[in-house]
Length: 335
Length: 119
Image: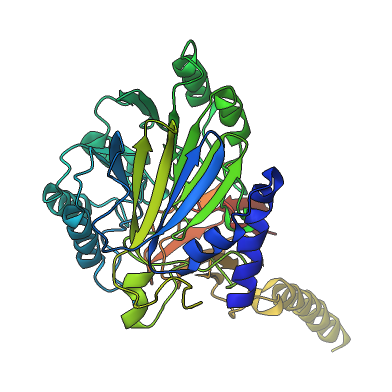
């Protein structure tokens, strides 16, 4: 229902209107349009310009480096919402490979597989092998924890990680932290980071200069989007308190299979589309399950996220692009 | 003859009482979904356990069936039972031999909760 969806987008945009810059129009366009939108933060004030998908002049130009986030590939899923998730993942990889700049690495924010089956992980690996970026970082989704609390996942993707699969790394001056909020979930709760991981996080960030750009990535959103559907993390507030002092924090999540964004002070939150199937906007359907769209529209509601680090701004420009051509020219089709 | 009548009467009475007691105690008199076969069902669909609270007699075998297009599990919060991952159309059964209240949830989507009350 376009009306309800619009209300929700407007709600999320409320925070953004507080510092006198009208981003409403731009972000509205970004949520609806098939074209990507470059959203750059310069000294805390966002500046945006429309960016045609197939333009040679892209966000990568002038950027220090870029990486791509993909999410929720759900290899093994084969129901009507998308009978061939392997094919759409391949389309996503082709899209990455077709970009004019090669990303330094890829981050997969979880739900790699549908049922944590070895064959599913094998298929995923096969497809990812063909990506232009050879370095891929992962965090698990709840669907990757289904065999012995994520044993299969850890064996394959847990090298260098701690506990249930958390880790951090530095890349060209930016500090990346991969968090796991899909383990040991309690009845009636949402995502959960747990005591051990929170202690590790506090320690990991200690002593780092506040001017270090921070990127946190985890499967379930680290901000509360819709508790009824479990779209949030019970103990994320503590984690976010550890990054409060930093000048630029970007939080990248998946799980909800649609784009949602929020800016709170110096922290930008962003969720990615899935490469497998879309899910309904909060409260617009009886449950959060796979949402069927007409076959010709599927490629428009699946996508990848290209993130560009711009040195001068000291922050990250995030561009979401759908897998397929939309045919719309900027205002969006309001599907 | 009087003696015989009394003797017969004293036989029949306890038999009748016993039969009445048997009838009162039989599963078919209680309100369950099925007759005397002490089974009950929980249907999983749209991220919901239905019925969310299921009340059954001791000895009932409860079968969870996943009719959703997403996998789910049925896990007792007290560690009493734990299903494997149930994909669409897969089932899990557990027989409740002790009276009590058994809260459970889906370990994949923990907001999904349910209770089995065994009386």
